[in-house]
Image 1 (cartoon, helix red, strand yellow):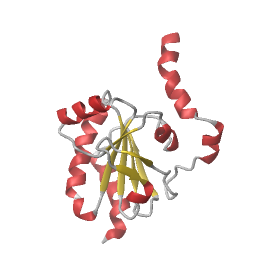
Image 2 (cartoon, one colour):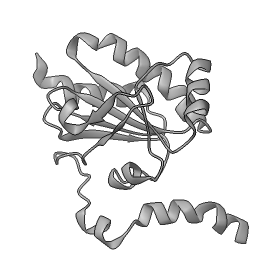
Image 3 (cartoon, rainbow, N blue to C red):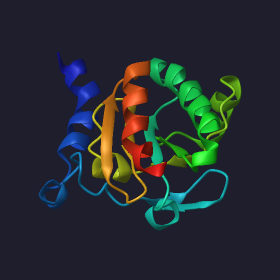
Image 4 (cartoon, one colour):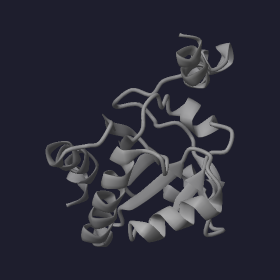
Length: 168
């Protein structure tokens, strides 16, 4: 029993966050998505202001997550299929080393931009409780859809429709 508690305690603490974080949470459909700020492992800065104006798919993942292993190539394909619509697919890793991330992405042939969330600040802001969790954000930085766990084709189509609908 104590092993179970020790395994899940970090996730419980992450889910609970601080009182200040809990008071400011508004990760709901139709509301502004939480702010995003960081440096991708490529060295490129990534922020809400640099992404605003274009649709964004944001996924939280880890190299040890089997559903993430299946989801990331699907998202890679979506990014390629919708590049003319200026869709950005951004993968937020849950704090692993850059070497481990690069090795994993090479292994599954994915080259999406990746942010590393070393201190779980982004995970807490976006209320991530399971991996993968994927957010569909429109060009006005409004959250339109979210999937929990490995998304199926219907969910991906729904999320894409929600963020690409007004782009003609």
